[in-house]
Image 1 (cartoon, rainbow, N blue to C red):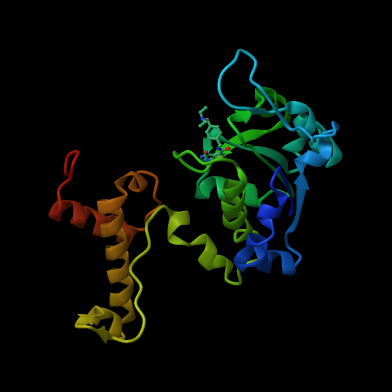
Image 2 (image 1 turned 45 degrees about the vertical axis):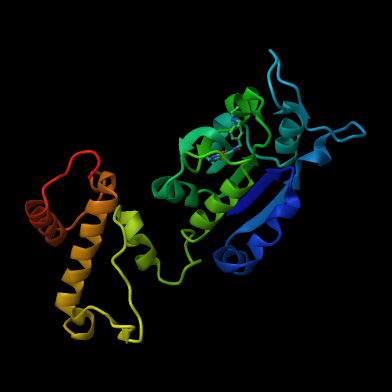
Amino acid sequence: MKIDIVTIFSDFFHGPMDYGIIRRAREAGLVTIEVHDLRAFAHDKHRTVDDRPFGGGEGMVLKPEPIFECIESLNVLPLEQRCEAKQNVVLLSAQGKRFDQQVAWELAKLERMVLICGRYEGVDERVGEYLADCELSIGDYVLSGGELPALVILDAVARLVPGVVGDEQSVAEDSFSRGLLDFPQFTRPAEIADLRVPDVLLSGNHAEIRRWRKREALTRTLERRPDLLAEASLDEEEEEILRELKRLRPERGAGG
Ligand code: 9D3
């Protein structure tokens, strides 16, 4: 996959792309990432990329021309041909659709992904309307720009590109991809400061361990993220465990 990032802070990306999954994906030649400095597409001597909002108000807005010119220079297909060619231009904005694991799987199928990072108070609306295929937000909190969201999306998508993570089955069966929280993990020592690892994990009984893990994952999801259960894909055994958990622990109202 070819990924282009459009930003006014290109240096911001140097560190994070040299570590972990993104580095691995790049070194394996499975993703190619280019960072483009938006200021290179401003033509005045101050390399202006922002301007005051029409209609008045606080703050500055990213101007459309440098962004339009930058995208033009990347030779992506016109809007109506992009989907077919598995190309997407994504505007990162707080007004976007929420990015989640399902969106990550969709993006991982692309051959080309362009991420435009917003800044200041916002981006001229015509960028989202006529240039980008979609707008994405990473969650309901205010950040100062789209650079961290771009890295978040890059990390989540890179590990789903076939070949980046060795065990593809484990990536697909990853609890979050199935809509559940993880079961708890332990490693040695079996005891520290009187805190013991659950006996079942030391028992060597693999059927029992598997069931215990399912039960823990479901208990946690039910307690911490009951919203996930509506969309989760559960097997027979998990459905049965969940019914039992609900019998033992009837639903509580707001305030828990
Ligand atoms: C404080 C300014 N806000 C009211 C006028 C609007 C606003 C503009 C620009 C809020 C945030 C931003 C910068 N954020 C992003 O560009 C952004 C973002 C985010 O803030 N939260 C979650 N996901 C994203 S993706 C891009």
